[in-house]
Amino acid sequence: MFAVSVAAVLWFYMFSPWTGHLSNFWLNMSVSALILSSMAIPWSGYKPGKFNVRNACVQLLLGVAIAFALWGIFWMGDKISQLILSFSRGQVDSVYAMKNGTDTKLTALLLLLLIGPAEEFFWRGYVQKSLTGRLGADIALAVTTAIYALVHIWSFNFMLVMAALVAGAFWGLIYRVKPSLLPALIVSHALWDVLVFIIFPI
Image (tube, rainbow, N blue to C red; front, side, top):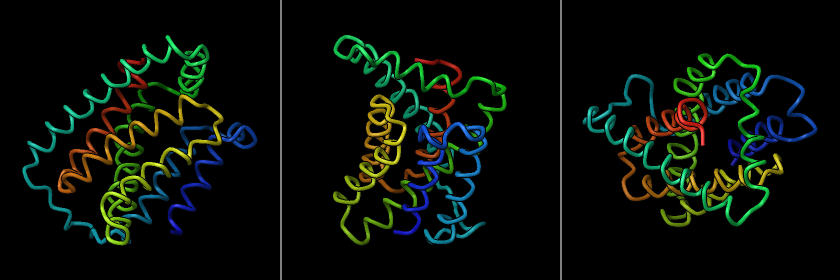
């Protein structure tokens, strides 16, 4: 799938030790989000102005609940990982170091309004949806989750890859069970990003 190959290249540029330092991480992430959106929107079958959200209030509330539930899972996971993995805290701190040097309010806005929504629409609303039609729902869930985790591998950060694996599996499973909750997942991804990076860092 061409779009996944593009995402892999973008994530390599953002996270690899050879290229990640060449430009601002949040600028790279924002540009990547725009590129992924520009592919996902026309190729996924959704047309601007025709993406109707049914039960918008319910979707919003579910999105908030999912975001806080996932934050709780990560909080527990952090405590457990510190007990069994001596390197975990250092790797988590290195992820948080990526926000250094960038205005906190700007970072929050980018995560909430651009990066989070674009990622969720791309990975679940386009990639998993497309693979479901080709491979079936269960295999699509497994493949999408694996790819979402593996594109982070160039960070050489085990904790970041595992975080992507857990989050991808969590959102992917919900989409597998009920694809109509995509708007709630978009809300949850955007809010979770802000929670875990800005408001309540773990």
